[in-house]
Structure formats: structure tokens, C-alpha cells
Length: 318
Image 1 (tube, one colour):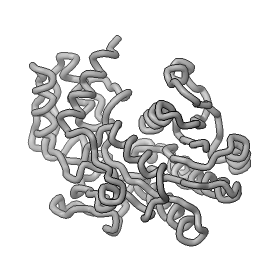
Image 2 (cartoon, one colour; image 1 turned 90 degrees about the vertical axis):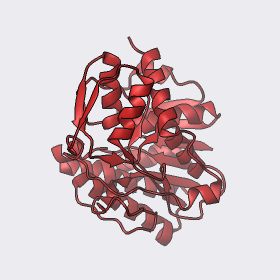
Image 3 (tube, helix red, strand yellow; image 1 turned 90 degrees about the horizontal axis):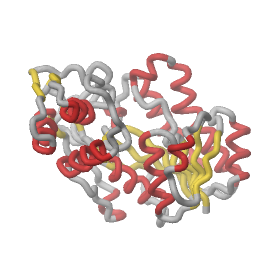
Image 4 (tube, helix red, strand yellow; image 1 turned 60 degrees about the horizontal axis):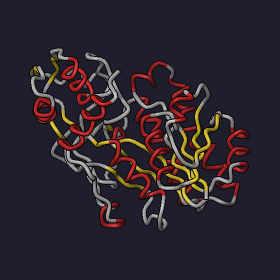
């Protein structure tokens, strides 16, 4: 059995490669080229780093056949609205075309045991009532380029599952934070948690809007959830949520960062900015399937996740 992880140099993909290899999986780690040899060498275990252009259908099919791939967790994507707006056609290729290419190559191989698409809570952009819980069965409402392309990928994954008999499943995740993401004070595109930590550890004051909330999920919990769906018995559903089940306010995040980093100078104003420049708030995503079906629970609270993140940030500072 060989597990293909696409987008293996990205935040979620790299963490998946490390954990799957630690568990003894045979892993093919896909990247686009220009792999940092130090990052590759830092991963121990049975891992082959392979450069594959996922937009090249023939190259994808050849790699899946050559590497004897029977399972895939598809992380490769243009992962933010900011990046998608720069090149909409490229975002479509990365977020939709590559999904179809991998699905079709695995279907044609005749060896497919599991395909897991990593998707996003951004498909709920129109659900701005923060009191409404968003289940797997809640109808989506997309607006931006990023959310639209990701929902297109969800639709194709479900089509391959329901119409072509592929063992394909989508897992939505939300506001992932944690190692190895490190930002400089003032950088906001990774969200409130790394932005506040960066300022706190640098001893610099930061000022952000407090009227923003989101379902933050620690990277290790995202990895555990994805591997739970990718392994074991065939999933009973075509869609799952790996989420904390509630939203957290910026006040809650700031309070925890102040406890973990004493002296952190975080000022919050009555605004949603800068967080809503490229993102929309939504009600809390909840899991109604994965916990009951596979006994999966997040291993970190917001406080323990932030504490672990700060600990890593300090230990790896140069």
C-alpha cells in the first residue's frame, strides 16, 4: 500500500508526510519542483519525494502507476483568496483540474482504495449568521474565487464517488494554525493566531480588530483527522468536518497568548479588520459524523494548541 500526499511541501501536506511516515506508511510526497533538501531530509521513514506536475494528466497517471499508489490525500491547492485573485485561471487549474486528474488516474489504475480531498470551511461564505451551526449537510454558499474553486473540487469528488464508484471523500478543515508556519510581526495572511504570537515573541505591540471569530484547528489535530478518514474501514459518508465545533473570538485568542507569553502587548479595537479583507466570518462548523463513526476527537483545546505552537516557535528560533 502506498499513500500519495499531494502538496507535500505545504502546511498540511508536510505535516501529513511526517506523521504518515512516522506511522510506518509508504509515502509518495508530491511537489512541484524546487524541493528544499533540508526539509526533505528532516522527514524520516519510507518517503519518496517526487516532482509531478498535477496539471499534466499523463504525468499524473504515469506516476500513480509507477509508484503503485492506492490511496491519496489531496492537499495541493492555491490556498487563499489573496493568491487566487492574482491568477484566477491558475487557481482553477490548481484547485479543480488537478483533483480531476488524480481522481481519474486512480480510477483508471484499478487500485484505488481511498481518495481524500482536503477542502475548506470557506465554502460557507454566505452563512454570516454566527449563531447558526454549519453541519456537513448544510447547503454551501460560495462567493470568492478560492471558495468557488474548492467547492467545484468537492462536487467532482462527490461525482466520482456517487456516479463512478470511486472511494472518494472530502474533508473540510478550518483556520489551521501551528508549526512550521512562522510569520513576522505585522503579517496577517495566516490569521490572528500567528500574527499575535509573532508580535508577542518579538516584544512588539500589535493592534488588530476584535470583532472577528473563527473555528481555529491545531495542525496536529487536522493531520489526525485526515489520516483517520484515509485509513481503516471505508467511510460511510462522502463528506466530513475536522473542526473544534465552535468559533473563538479574537479576545479569547489574545487572552491565551498573553497567558502563554507574559508581557504580550496586544491591543484590540472594535473592528473586523484586517481579517475580513480576504475572508468572511461564518457560524461555527460542527462535526456530526467523524466522532460518532470513528471515535475521532480533537486532541488540543485552543489553549493547549497555542501553547504547543509557542513552544515550537521558541525552540526553533534562529
